[in-house]
Image (cartoon, rainbow, N blue to C red; front, top):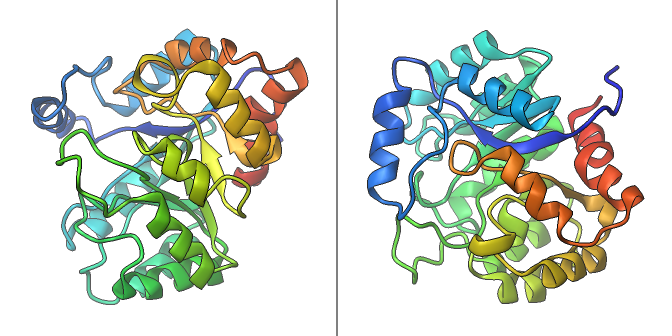
Length: 270
């Protein structure tokens, strides 16, 4: 069992080495900022070392139905005591719910879903079989929440109100809501998700790209410090900078310990 030395990053990304340059370049075209890393698993570990982070969750996204199998094989390849990959499944894939069960059988802790890049609304009926399969298997579902920089600001497919509808239909689902419940929709996240039975993580939700430190601390405490985790969203943000922004929130040492380590360790089964 790992001992709490520093931190667990519950939201990072990585791509296969051959794909990473093209994937990062394509994503950069839609964003007003550049990546801070190369997007490879090795680059992720280097960024973790620079920030004294022990473990990171490497989120994947199946943007096409046929990608799920290859992603699962790659996740098996990179899984280690430093990197905890979350495979993905596309909602248009044949028997997507069966693939969710296959991910669980392979020993993975969770899956990543992204409404925009996978073209679904979080609360649409065709997602119910995937959520139900994840719930039955005990998998954690990490779901992009809020707006996305690559899509129009009125794209509401990951809006917090939709996330609330999901948890009301699937009360046993283990759901981790990214970006403190809704990137650039934090007022709605506050109304719809704070205090409900979901987990939150902090990536891209603090500082110049998120809410101010006092607001973040207030939302975290009202939601319950025991249900919030640290996330960076590498390679789009440096873990060291994300830790610095979290440090500005005025949380107590005990609160930081829970947010940086204990909560995530519990979610990951450490």
